[in-house]
Each structure stands twice: as structure tokens, then as C-alpha cells.
Image (cartoon, rainbow, N blue to C red; front, side, top):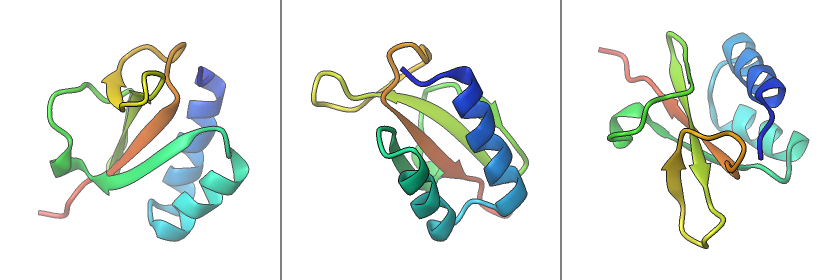
Length: 88
């Protein structure tokens, strides 16, 4: 489970500091029990983001069955996909 409050804190940090490798490393240190995946938003097909900003979207993932799948349910989520929006 990932609390909505935690998602809000992560979202706020990324809006403030930007989404990049260094920031994702910091998130991994701060929340070691959450699995973070960093990718391009173009690589994500299908799921609805739980947070969307100008520069990135955040998606929930569930890894309980040893295979990562997207979910919309924060109560079963084990990680977040942080998907950077490409500049056009």
C-alpha cells in the first residue's frame, strides 16, 4: 500500500526539484519500500495516471505476484512509475 499522503509528497518533491536520475535516487533512499521506475511517458500505454503535471505523470504499479502490473488502487500498489513528458 502507498498512502495518498506519500504520493502527494513525492509529487510535490518532483514538481519542486524536477524529475531526473538524481531525484529518483533520492526518492529511493527516502522511501526504500516503494519500487520506483523512471521512464518516458511515451513508454507507458494504457493505464491512467494518478498524478499529472506539466513535466511528468505518476502511475501505480502492483508487484505482489512477482510480476509488475499497472493498477489504479493505491491500497495494493507496491511502486510508482515516474514517467517524464517529452518536449515537443
